Image 1: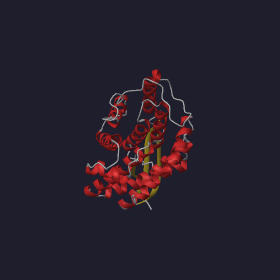
Image 2: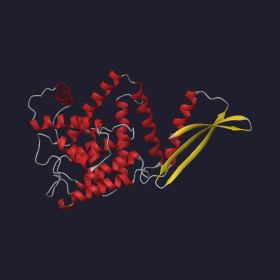
Image 3: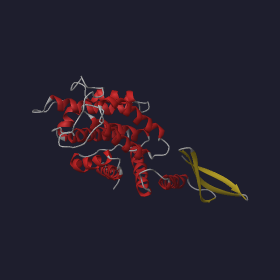
Image 4: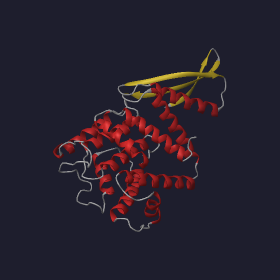
Length: 306
């Protein structure tokens, strides 16, 4: 995206950084002079990172402001730098820890009573804690399998991918509804939210996938991931598992563009659901701010940033 270009002008060696990317229907090309003569590679790489962040942040996005875009790009750089420095064993340890927390929190948000330690026993040690329901045990196991599926999946976002992911999280829990759209109205207990008629759900999901592919160039990848997940929740295409699916697909989209995964903490459930309700009315400002804040907390927790 950013490359180093040497130009010889009046016999002098001049160094420029060039950013070149297609956005919507046009190409964006910007260059920046960084000095004469020979510049050390580590200095050039540092300047490239800074220029890329500045340029991406300066672009106009439907919902993200400049400061948010800049912060997201900085977090992405720090994350990938840290991950790239880990040995294979260190990365596996980090991933196991992060995926355990992610599984615990996503299920807890939906009402699971498993603790973080109990979740770890189930998905890492294949042990079943006493006093827990089979549903809770399968929810933990299935969520971890869904994360592995996302890691291994090389294709694009599609209807088939979404249905397969849903089939994984409901396996051995609700086989009748696993990987299938709902055929009846749904309600959330304690909420006055209204969801589309089941007859239009398949077409709404197809429309949403079309929206995702159509806006690859004009939305920021982070912005597109969060908004897709919110639009999917608003459709509520399944009898069960809509929240978990929306967060899994959010992370799938982020991963495809090398952005860090987001772990939404159960302790922030009320704040998260408040932002989701606003997003149901296509007000995405609060959910974007919330997820950026959550990402920063995730990276601080794992000492990726200070």
